[in-house]
Length: 107
Length: 115
Image (cartoon, rainbow over the protein chains, first blue to last red):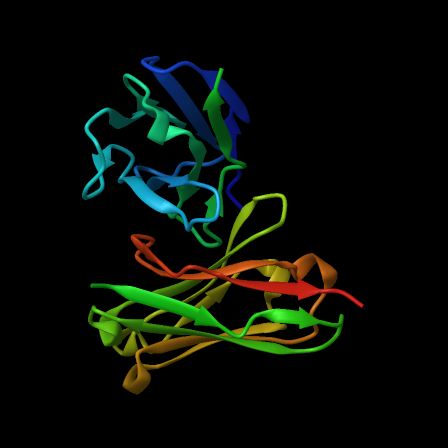
């Protein structure tokens, strides 16, 4: 199975900060990478698909990038509504696998 | 409006069975590939099963940990997808979500396996 190593697991940040979360794939997954945001008591919300494409309705302060087997989610100018857990998902090969999650919280 | 509603969760003893239902509306269910994803109490997400549409012979795939115990199925006439879970183990305790394209998710249904 493809392992998705996500870091950091916890990320304290201040409002207005620029933050980056990274997932490293254990095998080639091309651009078959999605990012999700999950708030307490809610279902995951698709934020980024195809590694770099913003999903419908997602604010432009979110962006996705790729460098080799490293995939990153960047949030510019952090807002209070961005505090959540973020997960990556590879869907290049079954079984599809998620990263372990990053809890973004106020410093 | 796209809606997915999971039902059927609850408390069940180890070794027993449970069937989850995901009723959908607001999109063309018959051509959609449907997935089940679960989230452990520790918040770890795990993809567990997928079923393709009729044109792809309703092909299924499963994560190894549920193969032979769980069965995903669908009824296009009811726009519903199901997850039959047999021989349940304590480690199957989780909130179970159905999703299509991972863009639309249900609210989840909690399954607790405990004696």
